[in-house]
Image 1 (cartoon, rainbow, N blue to C red):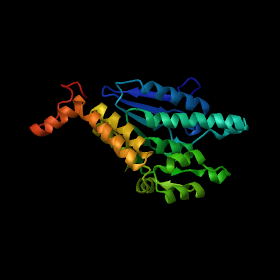
Image 2: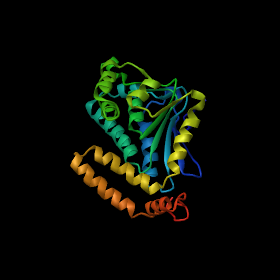
Image 3: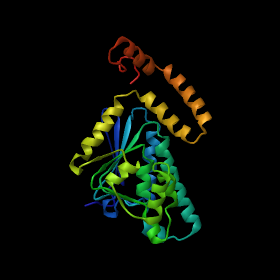
Image 4: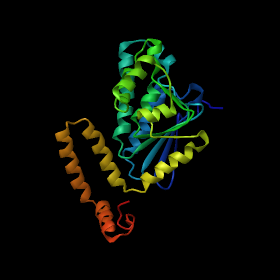
Length: 266
């Protein structure tokens, strides 16, 4: 049984630099209380400076991945100032995920609703169990999911995102994949295997190339196409001067696998 002494976020790391953060509030469906937001923020702040990290997997314990904000906690202090500060903390966390130098993969084993669905959308990649379901259901309570809308509208087509937001209806894992919210769907007992397959593909690549690429990917999305191409060209030029790219290109020319470890570019 979970006690008040148990950490709200469990952290595991393997020798490859794969860090797994598990939301550990199953009795409350891993809802994002202020304490949970603070615990996650602390983890991502630390990871931003951890050069040994290669991939972060964000998982949930129990039946739900994350049911969004803690509504009981929110209702206990109904003031505009409190709500502004709360949503600012949430936005800071979501941006920390996007700004992390390494990819973040959501491992979704159960429902992801409201800010929990936002959390999935803000992760760079997502793998869901076939039984997982997704919704931005605040509208059913008279509260339009405005902050989740920011993430959702940047993952799904406009009409698909708006339909979820104005109906509050659940979509299945397969629908989430078709709409672009998740990358892959696996049977529940194969979810870990599916995540590991994706993670293994990422850690096989040089960290520096992935980090530069992730930063550019999000920057260019917020730019006009001219500025995006200028930024992308400069990023590729910098990337080409790195040992990882020099070794990779030479290996291609030599018709051999790249040896990034020997070059210190892994």
